Image (cartoon, rainbow, N blue to C red; front, side, top):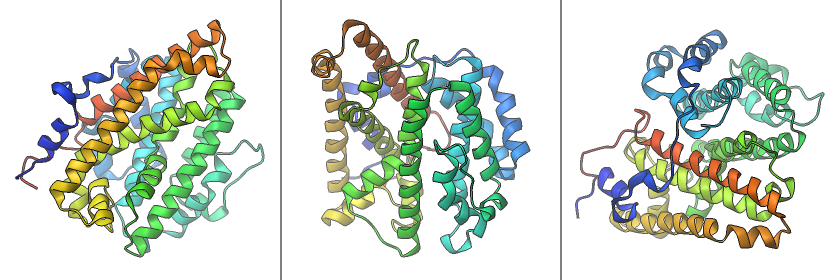
Length: 340
């Protein structure tokens, strides 16, 4: 059967729901932060000429306005810089062969956990300062700690940023030696190195009252955020399949090609299994929402705490809906119409 990426994308959604199963809103501060963020990119020299030329088309500003609709102006400006840093650093890593990466880039990769750390005296390797992405990251972490003033959030964010670092190093190692991992390892790695875990970590900051640490540090909450992240990064793999597959599966891994390799499947068999896996995760997430009150009771949450957690879940759902909304609108991931 001839398949197109658009056909496979549509098959993800039951009864033609498309991305509408997750709600969406837009932050009202969007237009006010566009120019300052672009000026920040230019002043820090973290985008080449092509990145600057396509910046508006890719709409990283719109992305953060969709996923963090409750953030204030100052909060949205800061997190947009963070998310833009992730996208541009991802380009910096992906768009060059491993053996062409500069010593400064490798030094930064190995210093990420020293920069984003709860230790007050942490500093990166001197060589890392030669990479243009290092100083902006140092500034972003300092600004985030000053603005949010939330030590428990810092601890969670730093841990997930460490996971981001380790997954990125693992991905680069496999690219260098042309290795393709198994599907479950790929999902675990991709969840961390795409930044979905880190991006999801900001959500708790935009709830009107502090979300209980007892909940945010629980296995339950971690599983919820992991599932939400998997739903997003696996959906992204459908949108980006042809671009990544054209580079070769050992150069740029993708969930579909990894399934084929793991199970020795045909392309159609891999797509069918992928769709089933994705829909199962979406059902699990929706079931979690239905069972939320019972689950909160099992953690000993009182009425006031439950109300706050419900607001957090609302913001997390908007984070997912905003990601889906951006995913189908940005030119970073274009639906390929030709037969695969």
